[in-house]
Amino acid sequence: MAHRTSICVALCLLIGACSNASSEGDGANGGGGDGTGTDGSGGGKVNACEEHVLNGERGIPNILVVLDRSGSMGDDNKWRDAVAAIKNVTSNLENGVAFGLLTYPSGGGTQSDSQCGAGNMDVSPATGSAGQIANELDTSGGPGGRTPTAGALDLARATLGGIQGASYVLLVTDGAPNCTPDLNPDTCTSSTSGTRGGATSCLDDARSVASVAALAEVNIPTYVIGFDTGDWGPVLDAMASAGGTGLDAYFPVNDGASLEGTLSQLAGNAISCSYTLDSTPADYRYVEITLDGAPLPHTSQTNDGSGWELNGNRIDLKGATCEGLKSRDDAELGISVQCELVLL
Image (cartoon, rainbow, N blue to C red; front, top):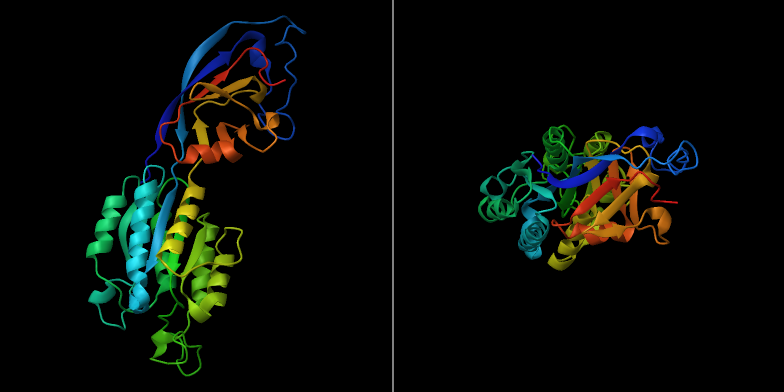
């Protein structure tokens, strides 16, 4: 279960004429209302405010790394490089991300080469899980077996579907999905560059694309990372296109450094810059936001898309403001609603 970080937010509830402000909030319509009656022009100025403390929660994303450990991952140090990259990224970002790990096929090198188990949910997503993930990678067995990608993704969907909060899958694989005993090896496309090796070597592209699409249907985007994938780029592109990310291509990597960079970028992008309030301010123009005690401008006051916006009962930090916050877990965000217009 993903944990959440709470911050203390101060809100002055508006009473008297202040309470008549529109409740539509931020947005293209200007939040509704013009503040009439609250600035002295209609009905007199009302200065009385009652302070109320709210709890604001910054969302922690769940990121499940789905790692291929089929036999080919033992070639050219791919497994070693993948293990090092995942350890580094999870260690660096574990306070802002609830990381989990699923490796497939089940058993890895401890099973026979024909093994096609869907995988092991080694570590369920949680903050502070880097040490547990590192231990699983070090002790659960090296590469071996085939590539049951569709089964692994179905297992990921079953697991993430029961976890609160936004969830993402980062699929790391070095080749074509297979493990399809229902296909005819004499007529199917082989996943092993022309060698047959039985029905389990039939290319499982259609079912793998469908598994990615099923994740997207329940709002779990899948990013596909191809580790030295050779001729299987079109298959991974089709999976990436179905992943609900807005992308139509996979991320190609060819060594540990490029894999670590891609994992770090994708995980960092998922870190939330949204704070959910337990009460909804009536009009964003009366809201004042501070970050570490300093006033934070609204997006309408900036030229680069930075600042903040109010969307219902959620404060969203934007652009450079968001990027500057992602690496921090000690930021102090203050939110107050004033009786006079803050944004003119």
